[in-house]
Image (cartoon, rainbow, N blue to C red; front, side, top):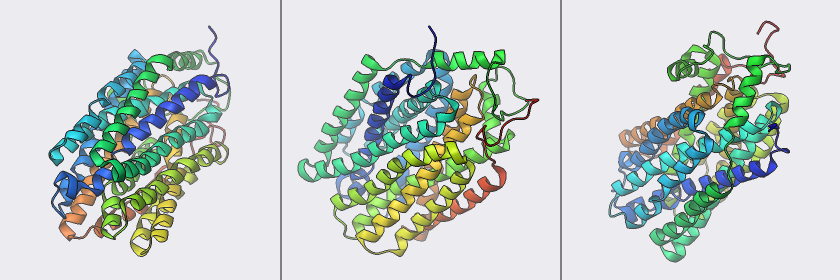
Length: 430
């Protein structure tokens, strides 16, 4: 069987994977608006207990980060489909835990399972698409993947806010969660195919020297079959380009941790209705998702590096603007600006990793990048929780995140470089 590469030859499976990541986004999205906004009234979190409030995001980030690492390596041994299926099975108890939760620690437990689910499923939808598409489609591929996922996140926030207002938060989340997770599990069983053979065939072509120019600037001094620790050190500090991308991925999750934990509570305390809170935060997710249809493809033409740096700084500006404006319209505009900044950097950091990771260990490299990126939920959650707790003001968390994005963008600008092979190809001796 001859394996073809590209979106068009693999369109049916590509669309199945897009549907999967939409459902993955809906799964995390159901926990992002109603749960934080009603943490005090519904789940017993004392007012201004900022560290307790951030505990579920810290747990989520740590677990998801570890599972990203595990998923990438594991998928190179057993295949992408089995890892995706396992992720959906783990998610089944989540809506039941939220429905029954007598106290906040039940929400933390549900979020731990959510972290496992997201680490396994979202990683696999992205890796599977990269397996079957061409090098010159990677920006578009990841843009489409993240568009579908974050459109799901945004839509879930809006829909669950409406369901909470009509059916009550627990019943609304129970019904929504069971439908979404059940659909993901069933569709994986029936229609998703394993894409590992495409990655293996590409790796074989590299070993045979039949890959045409331009060639990517792969890291030097890497074993033919690197182990997990070798790839981890390469991503974390040995290759300065990959390390710069990894630190940027970690810090940009500070923004999403802030949006998840404090945006709903901040807006709710300003007197904004729960439904309007859903729409403001939904605007952030919708702009983030929709703009990636353009920004991912744009990076295939103009490169990744400049877009990534610019996105970091725009995000930081959007976060700061939330504190400077005092109307629903202003907060919506600030959320949209933040979402646009995320759209510039989010797919293109991943595309940059894919550009310079050999197909033999690309799944592991993406998993380790996603480990560092999603550990940002944990580290960022702790940072913004401490900033708010010790200052006594929620606003301190916003400034902590805005400044972190400014500094991290500068680090990326200094140590990173363009990774697109057409714009910065390897020399003839590579």
